[in-house]
Image (cartoon, rainbow, N blue to C red; front, side, top):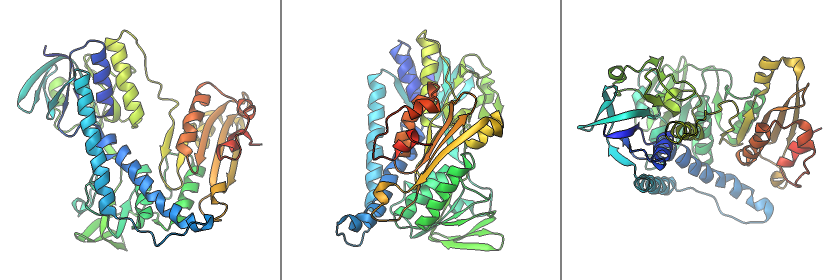
Length: 443
């Protein structure tokens, strides 16, 4: 065999697994037909968060006068912003390549295709490996409607030379909502078309409603109960059609979900079973073929970067490090970088009711305008929420909408992981004045 381990895909999960396995002495190669870093680094979390930061300056400048600062009419040079974001992505791509070399992992440029269970073709090269880890991630899904090819998906947005004056975003999930807030904050007129009756249906309904109210306050035009049927027109003069409704715009963004990227892998040659559109693995990340494993979005379980990283490291620890462990998918903190920001860990109120029954849970909440909005006297209100099991007083879920939600919930996740009760929260001295103190002062 050429290698002990061949990893397919140099995204977060693949990179983590490859470097960890190599640190245990395994001969490792990683195949990647695109840039190194994966969705998160190249076209997801990192460039998106940089644009989130950029979009927040509009509100800061608008509020400046209430704090005595005199500023002119704000304007964002989106061409410069996008160029700077791409430059940072280039730097990170180069950094990850150098880290692979430092870890003594061979990078093989090209997309891999199975020839048989141990043999793969990569850009004209035939490679064999004792074990293979599939970590190729996912790709944005386009609606099957006429003219869908005229729209952008999330990958495309970062490649633009400038942002449009107006955009219609189709979708109700976190990607659609985040980009709606980002683009609105950068001066783009945003209409968000939603097929259902609410945003962020995977999250606690009360929190999603608070985010929705904040988005409406930003001036985002939210249109519910609309089923897109076509995209018409040509570049910069497009129309999204939904029945009798029509929205004219410069660009359309389809943010209608992501799917595992299995095309071209030749999985049938390896005998790997595909269920629906995903790879099924057990707790050890093993597919139905004992020496072939999978981590990250290609398994379509919890599609988050830190989850893929931990799955990759757990695989390497177990197989090469003699430190067997499995990933706990039950308690994962997550954030939606909308405006206002939302973050959550544990069970939503609806999930807690479904699991324990309405009579067995208790909810504490606080809704208020944060102190940094006191002088401007405007802006979205914060919502902090604790979901408890009555019998044990244990905190089942900790949720927040408001500034710095992600930073605050990350720490709360530690408490929930240790089985904290409401009494444990109440015994904590409040840090005043802060937003997070409300979590330890709720009556």
